Picture 1 (cartoon, rainbow, N blue to C red):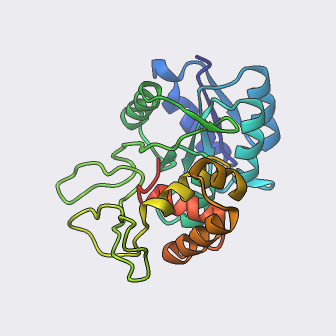
Picture 2: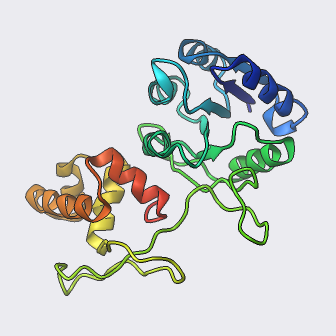
Length: 244
């Protein structure tokens, strides 16, 4: 285990997170980086187990940081430092394999719980060294009315699509939540293929479908999810709990 790297553009926040991380056994040793180049340099020398990454990192930004980090430390678990309002940044980070997000003012108990959760969870190299995204429980993320911590990702429901193939089952609908667009089992399989970095041709080969049929399923799931492209579709799928 090679500890944690705290990468944040604010020296004040960075230093506070370093102090918070010190004393958490799962996060030892603690290193800090002010930007992408420094993060990559540290990770290249000694790959970290966990990276706490500023969602608003100065250019080239957090998205590029994750991409470059994957090349030098594919096993590192990236946790974004963001607020629930940072929807676009969270979508991009989750699509690239981030494990979840924490508030920048996270305390030591919450950080300890997150570190223990990540280390206890299997980090699967789904594709190109990207770990599969998992829920990161932490009271810092938010609280229900009874004070219980919510997971990073929330489940959004699915509803029946009248245009679907009647022979194709839909994903079960979680209860107690608002309705949204349904994905069929086949569309979920295509979405999983996308999340694993597969091309349409590769997905078709795995599912014994033509490439054109895969494209049709892709167009339908994009429309249902309100996604513009693959990355956004995967991010939405992760946040809704449709894929893991």
